[in-house]
Length: 221
Image 1 (cartoon, rainbow, N blue to C red):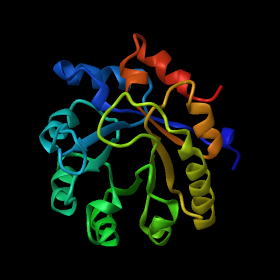
Image 2 (image 1 turned 30 degrees about the vertical axis):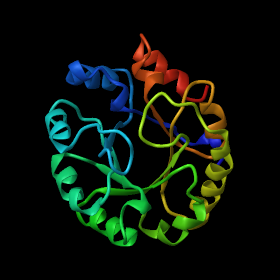
Image 3 (image 1 turned 60 degrees about the vertical axis):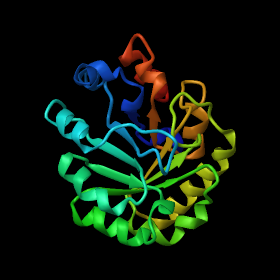
């Protein structure tokens, strides 16, 4: 399928929102046309930052109908999946490096009725997940090193996105190909052209005065 023919999912990242008014921020991006809400969970161990846990998800869940796209940057990961599922996650993605048995982690997420995702750090090769695509619903390419918002996009990830597009198409399953890190109206076209269909954007949305215009600016014309 040509890049322009795919519907592009826009998932603003809560990490860039005003934490003093999270409920209002979530309502605003839902009204502005966001497709998912991306939630970056960081433990200060797997990545050098700490964000929030399942309590925050549970508090926001009753205030929005947006799918919760949860990105777990925590290690070990398996022990916390049930808690995030119970808190209202719809998608749960993790880094294969964060657990000894990523196949088992994928099976656990899917057994809870959630979509399962694999996350690739900038240095993680696409071949590392080739034997797990049969259990994946999402593949997320980090186009910055994980842990902090506001970083600049790494162009080195474009060939990886293209390679993963080919792997996903060959798998013949509906797997979302997401990209997170430095996504702006300037970088989004190249990311989409490489084959991505889901854009995670933090400051490009929550840092804008008009959320609807910011989301529209990330979609293809």
